[in-house]
Structure formats: structure tokens, C-alpha cells
Image 1 (spheres, rainbow, N blue to C red):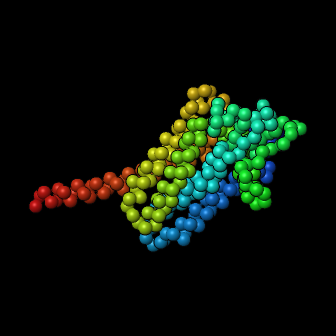
Image 2 (image 1 turned 90 degrees about the vertical axis):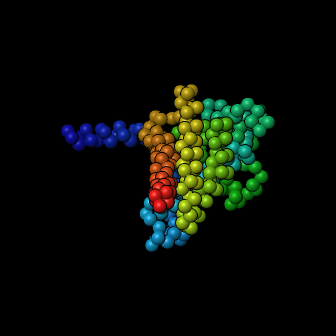
Image 3 (image 1 turned 90 degrees about the horizontal axis):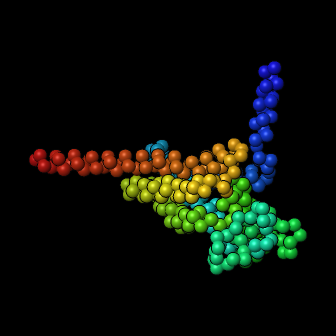
Length: 278
């Protein structure tokens, strides 16, 4: 009886999984995140002195290196598709397409984003999937197509990432062009033992927490119409876990950095009091 119940529970759980859970594109997408984390850890081994770097600051180095690589490699590719990948509006399945905001980049007859490369096209349409910009053929074209497919995987949980959402694009421009370089700056300062790093870390962490709020609050206000929470993978892995990292860890960063700054103020105040007592 117990085995029957367990079997039934397992079957119910499996029924909640997306049918494409183990397809090649999904696995490569998840593996790319792991690869970036490994690269960040490897960089910490090269850049930090294990004798003088605390485990706390080693973790913060790895996080900011990981953060910068995610912003440049993954979110940078998202912006590329938003600006340079396009297809005629009528080419994509009207039930699947994420329509551009009116007059986006001065066009009303095209759709942009990863969907223009890897979206669902109307069967038999002349021309087929669009080419991304003028990247030519060969290896570069494979990279462009691969990143488009990656974002279409994530777009299964949040449809906005298949095309162009003005709030998301605006935030990602700041993230890639400003926060990414600042995260590299943090890694440099941690390696050089520069106390300035605590101020920069607080700036980045505050921006990322605010960015997370501004990514999802507009969607919540319209009833989360673009979010798919029908199974645990979309809800807990794609939406909760991957976005929650950029809330929980920045909060920890603020805790550590503000503690270091407060300690410096206490030392200064003690010095001032000692000077006055002389």
C-alpha cells in the first residue's frame, strides 16, 4: 500500500515537470550558469592570497566575479537581441509572440529579441527565422543563435525575456553597462585590499535589490500575465531561485560592508575621544 502511494506521489510530481526539462537547450542553459560560477571561483584562486584573504571576502570576490560575468555574457546577449535581432511581425506565431512596445527603435512592423531568432514561426512563412544583425555565418552565428535559444528557455517562465519589455531593457542597460564594470572594480579592490571596496559593494547591492523590485513589481501590478508558475521548475528555479540570489546575497553584502564601515567609524570616534581627553 505504501509503495503504491509513493508511486502515485512520484507520478504526480513528474506530471508537474515541464516536458522539455531534459532537452539539450535547457541543460546547456543551466550548465552555462554553473560554468560561469566555476570560472569565478577559478579567478579567485588566481587573484587572492589565501593567507591574507578571509573566507568572507573570498566569497564576496567570487560573487562579484560571477555577477560581472553573468551581466556581461548572459544579460549582455539579451540586450544584443533586443537591439539587433528582429523579424517581420507577421512571421511569428501570433499566439506566442511578445509584441514590441509601439514605435520601438522607430519600427512598428517588426518584433525584436531572442524570439526573432529562436521563437515559434508561422509554418510555411517565406524567409523563416530572422538573422541577427550582420553577424555573418559560422561560429559567431552559432553563438548568437545559442544565446537566443537560452533566453527562450528562460522566457518559458517569464515571457518578457523573449522580446522587448521597456522596464526590463532599461534596467539591463544599467546592469550591463554600469553594474558589470563596478563588479569588476570590486574584485580588483578585494584583491588589492582597498577599503574603498565596501562603499562600492553597497552601491552595487542597493542597485541590484532595487533592480529586482523594478523587474517584477510592474508585472505583479498587471496580474503576472507574462509569468508561468504552473510547475515547480519555472516557479522555484527560474523565477524564485535565480532572481532570489540577487536579493539575498546583495542583502548579505550590505550587512558585511556596512559592518566594516561602522567599525571604521567606531575607531575614528574612539580616536577623537582619546584626543579630546588629552
